[in-house]
Structures are given as structure tokens and as C-alpha cells.
Image (cartoon, rainbow, N blue to C red; front, side, top):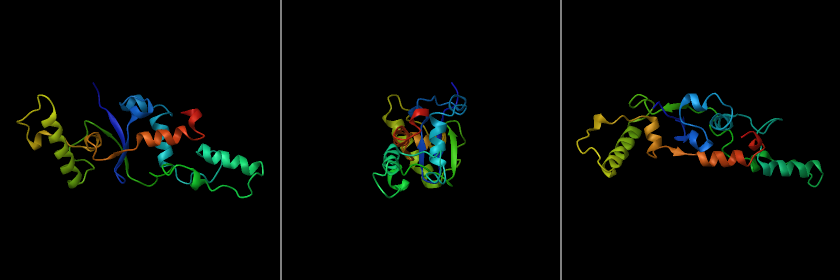
Length: 172
């Protein structure tokens, strides 16, 4: 089968799911390509975006900039008022590409481990044929599992939309 991955911001407790960017979940299936997941990661990690040519800009900003160039408005538009707050929002944060086979507890706080374990137990109880004899130590709790169970916030769709509504959409 293989190991599946999410791109996770441990600082903000957020993640992106490669499948939201039409990528597959194995590392070798999304890392080698500059589009999709890796483009989203670049957009989230960029620092100083909007301060020079070649940056990622929202289509709304590009429209306002054209008005300035045509002299329909006299003040150059403020990029931060138009760009998605997601652009550069992960800059400086602790980021990991976390696999579903990763070590138990790695990168998680005790509270996150407890929340993930609790949610995993609920899922086990709800599932048809769930293992009623399963003990705490039988669960592997890792960052991937925390993401899968909703302990971390999935920002995939918001990131996808922000890129689609930008001057990068043609590369996406």
C-alpha cells in the first residue's frame, strides 16, 4: 500500500491534504511536482510576498493595480487589503510532512495525544466490527492521525481557493 502524508503546520495546528490539490498522498507522488501541494506549500511559506515583481497576487489586487496604471485611481493599492491572509501565513512556523506510519507521539503535545486517542477510540466504537478489546497502547497516535481525526484544522480548500483566485492560477 505505502505511506500517506499530510503537510502540517505544527505551530498553527493546521494542515493541507494533497488530495485537495489533485495530488496523490504518497511522498513520491506529490513532492517531485511544482504544482498542487508543493505550490500550496510555497504560497503558505512565502515571506515578503507582495513587495516585488513575480509575487503571488490576488486577482482583485491585479484589477486595482490596472486601475492605477490607467490613472483611474491615484493611490497605489495596498496588497495586504486584497491578498488572501493565507499567503505567507506559515512563514517561520514549524512545518513537517507527516506520514501515517510515523512514530507514536512524535511532534505532539500530551494534550494533542490525549485528544487524538479519545477521538480514535470514539471512531473505533462507532465503526462496524470495531475492536472492543483494543487498549490505549494498541493505538498509534501521530500527527497524521491527529489531522485525520480533526484535531488539527484542514486549510486545504481555503488555500486551493486563494490560489485559484490569484495570478498563479494559470500555473495551478
